[in-house]
Length: 254
Length: 235
Image 1 (cartoon, rainbow over the protein chains, first blue to last red):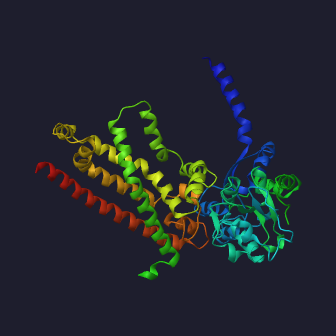
Image 2: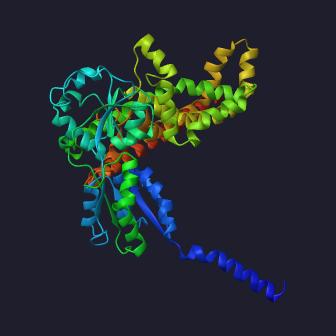
């Protein structure tokens, strides 16, 4: 090979590599329920020079991994408690934390169930409707959706009757799956989860004052507050992100 | 000493022992049978059966748990029948947890048993047969005693694997305190809660103690059985 050819080849390789090098690459740790939204926003951010690789899992698992040094540049959680946990340990970039979306809690069933002609609130005969079946929910011990579910069921006075007839799962998706397969008669999941399968029906929607507000938050982790990531967070809380959340069945940021 | 663990943690430990014990005892005869089929029988589909037995070893446990749910859930083919005919519910019960643990531990059990069965001197079996013993008598009086070290090892391996079972269990029977929340599930629950670290560490120590005790007992038992089996022949 002549020197000229080598030079040309080298230049071509460099030219091909250039746009890639200009692209900023970040890793985002996001609560599993936000997957449809983040997946939809990844191409949008790519056009703006930010290549996101997203890691989806439960808020708790992700927070623990970040605490133990996982290379996450941003964290998106369904539960402010875990954001507090990271903030207390000084693992977040200052003043990057923000609300990005909200959600509602719904009671789902596998088959359409006859609903009693009364308001879904205190005195509603949930135990009767459950019969000898079980109610699937994220484990109230640690899954945010399960915590909210416990609050909501307590608020309508049904928790004591139901607490021995639960099927607690390790994440909210597990509860969705059990109802979709018909193994659990009822389940409590987020409104946005219902869109993920055609095998469940919304039986009732919990009033939003029956549980703590379900607010999704995002923040950049310590020492990673680049312009690209700040822009990503702005997109999440801006019109494009809010439209994506609404399209996926979430509520807009509070 | 009793204060070392909370009542819930004691419950998780007791449940784990119960589930693992039943998983092991229940699958022992099946394990011996499967080891015998794989070691002694040549038939069309032998490789396929062998692969099927090993599936729980190579597949993600969650897949096995989901498979059990599809098969043995109340809406499942087998589970629906069990419920309709016998009123047995496996999903969300400790019995279901035992089945999940047994399935996950089965390949380890069969492997150990098969190895020791293959080491059995077939000349001894032939000798018994020429002396007029029926096949079942040959198996019970000659083959089984000779492969006993492998049966014990297989049983203990299965017990140890059952103690640690997590993925298939939580998928099939979920995480119900006092009913299906075994030691690994209790440990996982604690690691997922802020401030659960101390409890998780306690349960981890406990898991190590139980596992090491089980393995040491098995070593002892296996050595005894082996000595006895050898003495038996040399008599």
